[in-house]
Length: 400
Image 1 (cartoon, helix red, strand yellow):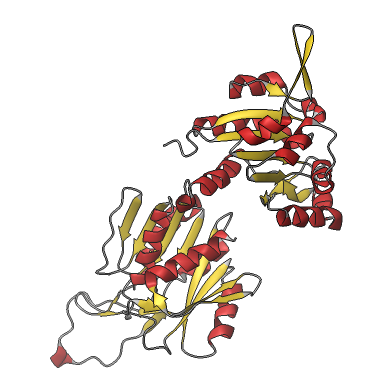
Image 2 (spheres, helix red, strand yellow; image 1 turned 60 degrees about the vertical axis):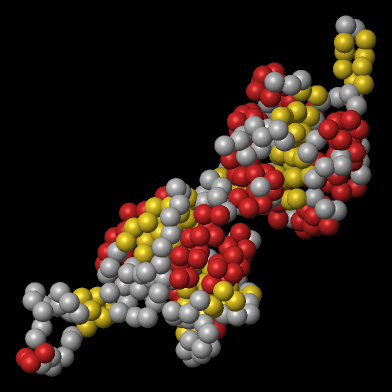
C-alpha cells in the first residue's frame, strides 16, 4: 500500500553529517508513492551529492537561487517551490539552519523556500548531544514549534563526535512513519508491532478445578482492536476469555496458565515495538496439581500455593527498545501502589484502574482509568467504555 501516494514532498537538506542518510530517505518516500523534490544548502553538498539524490527522486536537485541553462542564468523560484509542496521536510535540520529559520535569515535557497512555504513544515533536528541540549537550541526548537512547525524527536545513540546520547537525526523509516501518520491519522501505528496480553490465567488444582480471577479480557481485546485500527500488527496473548476478534493483521495466541503466558511473551517480546500487559495474571498457583479429579467426599485439607512467574517483571528486566505499559488494579492506596509498580517493573507507563467504582474493573463494559507516565505525571479520564479507554491509552502511548 502506497501510504504517501501522490503526496508532494519537498525535502530540504542542510549541511550536517546526517545528510548521508538522505538518499535512503528519498528512496523510502518514493517507495511509499510520494513525489519528491530536493533542495540542498551549499554545505549539504559536502556530505551527499546532488547526482545521487536526483537519480533517486527522478527530479533535478536545486541548491542555489539561479541555475545555468545553456549559459543563460534562470531563476529557481523559491515561491513556486514553497507553494508546490504538500509538506516541506527539512532533514537534517542543523543548529545553524534552525537558528536562521527562527530569525528569518535568508542566505540560501532552502531558507527562502521555508519562508515562502504554505504547506506544513516538518523538521528533523540533527546535532551533537551538547549542542542539542544547549538552551539556545532548545529555545529555537520551542520557538519553531510555536510558529506551527512539526519538530520531530531526535534519536539516541552513537554520534559523529564519538559521544553517545540524544541528538541523532531519526532514521529514514521513522521519519517516513511520522509523515504517514500525518497524512493518515488513523494509521499512527503503521509498521509497528504491538504485543498485548489479555484476560485471566487459570492455575490448575486438578484436571477440573482451578484458581482464577474475574478478568474478562474486555480491556485487552479493546486495546487490540484500537491498535489494529491504527495500522499495527498485533500479537494478542489471551487467557481464557469469551471475547472474539478477527483481523488479517492479528495473531491470537490462546493460553491458560501464567507459565504458558510467560512462554508466549518470551517468544514474541523481542520483536515488538510496544508491549501492553493488560492481562490479570495470577500471582499464585497450586504447588502440586492432582493427576485425577479430587473427590469431594475425600475432602481437601489445604491447597498449598507457590508464586507464579512474574511476567511483567520479566518483561521489564529484558526490555530493550520496546515501550512497555503495565496495568495496576488497586483497591487501596491506588496511586501510590501504581507508581511503585511503575518503578519496580521498569515500565514506560502504567494504567491504573480501581475496583472501588461499581461500573469499572472486571466483567463490565466501562472503565475509569488514570495513565501514569514514567516521569510520574498523571492523566485521569472519566468513566467511559473500554473501547474509549483503549483510545485514550494509545493517545498517551503515542506521546512517548
